Structure formats: C-alpha cells, structure tokens
Amino acid sequence: MAWIDPEVTKKPKKPMFLCVLSNTKTAHIPKLSAAGKTAELTDYTPAGDAELIETGNIISVPVLPMTPPYDTPTPAIMTRSALKLTEAPYHFINSGLIVTPEVPCIDLKAKPGEDIREPIAVRDVQGIYERAKFLAKRLRSQIDHVVIGESIPGGTTTAMGVLNALGYNGNVSSSADENPLELKKQVVEEGMKASGLTFGSLKDEPMKAIACMGDPMMPAVIGLVAGFQGTEVDVVLAGGTQMAAVYAIIKHLGFNTEKLAIATTRYVVEDKSAHFVELTKTLEVPVVYIADPGFGKSSLKGLHRYETGTIKEGAGAGGAMYLAGLFGVTQDEFRSEVENVCKLLKAGQ
Image 1 (spheres, rainbow, N blue to C red):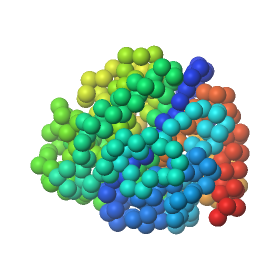
Image 2: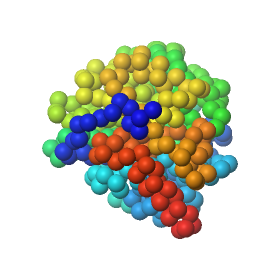
Image 3: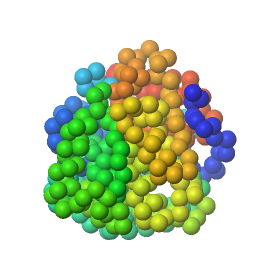
Image 4: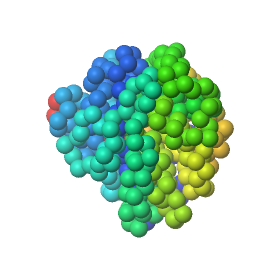
C-alpha cells in the first residue's frame, strides 16, 4: 500500500489543522477505553495529547498518554511529527474537557460529556454547535483546506451509541489489542434504554442522538463543518469510526457532503473487529484517505505495537499524515521524525 492512498497531488495553498479535545465520563467505565493507563487517567489524555503535539512533551498531566501493557505511545506523536514537517498552522479546541492543557486552546464553553447510560449524555448540544460554527466562519477566510481531528477517550463507544440511534449497525474500532465489543454493546444498550430509544428511532433527530448517546466532540466538529459549508474550503475529518459517526450525523442533517472526506490510518481500515470500511460505503463517504506510517520498518518496539493492532488512530493522526503527504513528505521522512519525537520523549521522562 502507498504511504497515502489514494494519492493526493493537489497541494492546498492555505491548509489548517484543528483538533477538538473532549472528555466523556463514559470513558470511566472500567475496561472500556485503552486511552490511558487507568480509566481515571483517561481524563488527562486529551490535555496530554495537546501538550505533546505543541511542545514534544507533557507539562501539567501526571503521566504520558500511553496504552498499556507495552506503553505504546499515543497517536499524538504522529500528529506532532506531521505538523512539524509541514509547518501547517493549527489550533486546539476545548469542547468539554475535564482537564485543560497548559497550551493555547480555543474554548467553546462546553461541559464534559456524561456517561451515556444517563438520560442526557451531552448538555447544550445546540450551543456547542453554534459556537463552533461561529469559529469556523471566522477562520474560513484564512484557509482553503482544513483537517479536523479529535482526542476523546471512550469516543468509539459514544460513536456506536449515536450510530445505533441513527439506525446503523456496525462494530466500532478500539485503542486496545482486544476490542471490548461486548462491553461496548452492553453500555450502548443500557444507554439507549435510559434515554427511551430504540434502534434507528432518532434517524430524523440527529442532534438529539448526540444529546442522548454522544459526546461533546461531535457537536463541535459538526458546527465547524457547518461554518465551512458553502465555501471553497475542503474539509477532511481525521479519524476512524468516530468520524464516520460524525459524518453520519452530518448526512442526516442534510449538509452538502461533496467537499467532505475522511482520513484515517490503515490500522483502522484493517481492524477485523470493526466495520469501518462497510460503514463508510453505506454512508457513501466521497473519499476515504488511508495513511500508512510504515512502523513495521521501525526499530522502536512501541511503534511496532501499532502493527499488531495496539492503538489505531487518535489526535487526528491519520489526517495529519494525509496533510504530510499533501506536502510531499515521504513515508521514510515521516517515520524518522516520529522516531525522533519518541526518543526525545523517552529522554525527557
């Protein structure tokens, strides 16, 4: 497989990378999310990702965002490497963080998401959406191409919840070696029951699907997309099944999706426990870009774990790599930079 597939030849003149940082208390459910050494430490993961992308290390969080048991480094190392190589401008957006990072962040004044087994999972969905839309309207004159990523532990479970509420079957991916699908299905089932929902019952009320079963990252990303509608800005959603769920909401809202694409890693696409490819086909996503960092050639054991299915995507890594490909960065150049970031991280511990 090529480094970026399909290959992209059109280099944007004014690209930008946006990363929405959020938390959901759904991640506190034991064994649900692997985006942190313990369920409680997942509260720090988005802040840690932002600090790592910005500075190359963590500042305020107590532990690096790693996936046990092999301390596989967060996908944020890929995002930092790509942004460093391309020098593309970027912003972090706080949409419901429990822990805020010690780096500049645009605040959407959102509350963290609740456990989806509560009747309301996301409060003020419309307010978050409107504030994000306003932000995009302010940014759109500065750019012609935007890549939107996310960092939210527990986000694949909320994605499954929203997809079920909209009427889509399909297993979501996971940041763990063993995808805890049965647990995720049980949590979603309990969440649907708590909100009085049945499969597909909110297909005509996508924003309510977020309120009942989603997370605060979703209305933020959808609001950003709304703010770029009707312009010449190409929008790439950077992520796996979580961004497929966001795309499903966008489609149910009746947005124009011609200038929309999804970019993710080959680890998500090759995840046999998930239905990402089938889902994107069902949703008729115009283009899905697949990035392969080639970590099998790396000498670092932590990076090898990606090749065996530990972690797959996050912090907009697939989209950041897609951006690097747009700028003509080769796979070898990219992997070398990721290794440098990892070595500096280890030296700084």
